[in-house]
Image 1 (cartoon, rainbow, N blue to C red):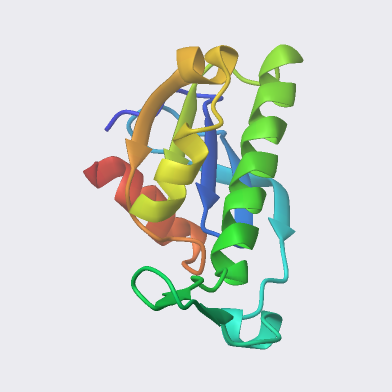
Image 2 (cartoon, rainbow, N blue to C red):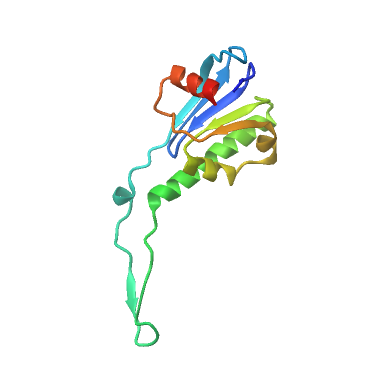
Length: 146
């Protein structure tokens, strides 16, 4: 993929987001970190307090049970909504004209639910990979290979 000069690249997962600006040219990206944010989101087993409840009834099927809430997943969804809101805010401020989002499939799906039209209009590519823990040169290689 050719990444335009000054394009905005966001690399995210369910708990971390990195914002880069391409200071290089389209064929040879040179990503510079503009902003990074990490959200503490422990595994669900550390966030939930009880097992799901169950109730017994003398009528009907006899037993009903309630599904346990996955607090870890809820936090990832909330973080995706906050990330999309930040993209919207920066789009309204004209901080970027072109946007590339790199995230695992589940995070991409959560982000897409919250994209504002201003963000969607500037989106030039989405790459479904988890690269938040990778060095910048590997992110640049992933962009070139996309």
